[in-house]
Length: 357
Image (cartoon, rainbow, N blue to C red):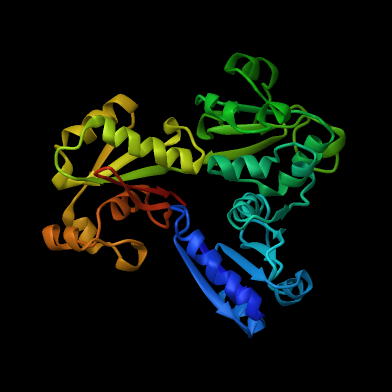
């Protein structure tokens, strides 16, 4: 994620610098830029450019300088506020889809402060449907249903989840079993026969069958589906010559742990052609049952340099490209993909993870 930190006081400026140092150690944080004073003009310029905006200032200041820029929960950045004594971290905007709530908890832990989250599903111990989608890297195709679904969750109505794919990895997500139940294929087909679209086309359906909550919407009484599509997650790999299978697997497991994902949530692995016969990478792909894709040096040379977060002098000197794992992951993830885990080295293996659009 790209993070901007705005400050207005000398205390805030010092805290911003300390927070930047800590955040850049996190592989999921790509860049952190600091802006001091003139915050109204700054936020007007950067609002659409960053995934997260953190204001170290009074909540009222942040509300006033950002309120005219807010437009849509599916595209607005996450906004957090921290008082300049570092006592409280407040999730202000885009708590679920933008990830502000989870980042609030992470930052509060980093600076030993109090996380303040006011989202109703969170404070009552439920997992909102948009929070589940963000954590799982799913795209919600009909976000207008987020509010009625979360209202049902608050009314203690379990949301039913159906997929042709195996979603057992979700059982480890906190609060999942309190909020959701998983339908088998046979139960789904027996009870929801009036669906007007091709289920096979969509990977996941979330179902809410409350007629009362949907009586003003043009949705079938027996099937009120939210349609979710998993984004493609691609692991980019580089390595020293002769790395073992276990070294590669260990690096993937560490990245998965930081991303709070199971290893089987990754869709593909990618590496450069000079590593296409690297035994450790091939054996790891085989054992984890994750398909391995190969990209050419020429593809990486043509890849936009500005999309690559990290570079290596050794790789550039040896192969004529600035990096391997990041561009390989981005190339295979496709156009408009983005890094969600920057190049990180683990015992001879470099790993990055890209997410499709």
